[in-house]
Amino acid sequence: LDPTSPDIHLGHTVVFEKMRQFQQLGHQIVIIIGDFTATIGDPSGRSATRPPLSREDVLVNAETYTTQLFKLLDKEKTEIVYNGDWFRKMTFEDVLRLNARVTMQQMLQREDFRNRIEKGQEVRLHEIQYPIVQGWDSVEVRADVELGGTDQLFNLLVGRDLQKEEGQPQQVVITMPLLEGLDGVRKMSKSYGNYVGVDDAPTDMFGKLMSVSDELMARYYQLLLGETLDPSAHPMEAKKSLAEKLTARYHGAEAGATARADWDTRFSKKDLASAELPELPLSGLPSDLTVLTLAAHGFKEAFGVEKSNGELRKQFITSGSVQLNGDKLTDPGAPVSPKAGDVLKLSKKHAVRFI
Image (cartoon, rainbow, N blue to C red; front, side, top):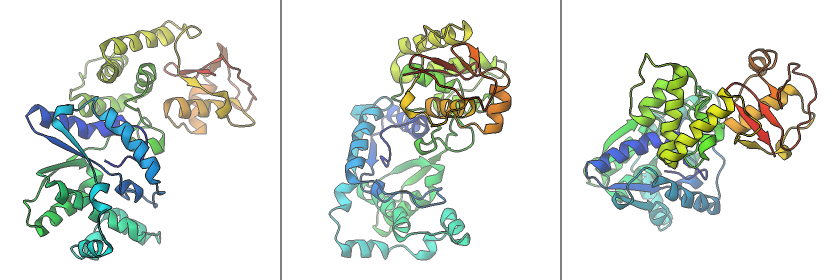
């Protein structure tokens, strides 16, 4: 688990849920914090090189990761190790010997590497090292079973190969589906701004989950709750139930129920002035603000949802959904100057307060 950001999000928890099931069956879980590999940057699924992280940033992120992990996992059945503990002891000779166990042909079997080469894009040597480095983690912990997202399959199989080279039993590899983010297009990721963090405030978590599309609800039920969505359920009630259950999982049953009641107050009863809303700093607003840019900023920064200009104009602004303190803003190009305390309503499911 590479701590590339300070937060664990719901996309990460798909794998953690499976780990929790192993713990419930009596197994011990080893979480490998990639404090070394995070400074390289995992190229999996990437069309460009990841920017490197400093060791200081990685260690700060790792500390928050370990705290958040135990919202899902049994601490008594979890061992946390850092791969920097073994990689930083390696000499250059050790690195060369490790590289000798893998061929360039193997590395070029990776689809993302091949695609970049075919398009004339760079693949840097440190990126080619990444699967080898991650694979060596399996050798160090003598893994019996390794879990990861489907985008990690190549790296996990390299681990099997290296275990065989070392005379160890080869690990079983289990891959879990990648969870689509709130935009419904790309995988959930903080870098895409389409994520729900497990440490998000209850009202923020509930509100973000209410923006999940009806088409994605069944997948969220299955991957995050291990439940099957009742096809006869009303979409709005099913979504409220999903949001309440997930909020309760990370903040407690009372917080889940309170977040749901607050959402009903805000949107069902239309009482936005006194409701607890996500806050949006005025200092982060774009210059030369118009209704269109304000709506785009509100959706993206408060809810992690990116809307096209055409979608904002047709579905939200000209329809009267976008309102400032109850006044409809129907001209996309009109200038607008919100003040601290103002409430911006973006849709039936989205509203923010400026601070």
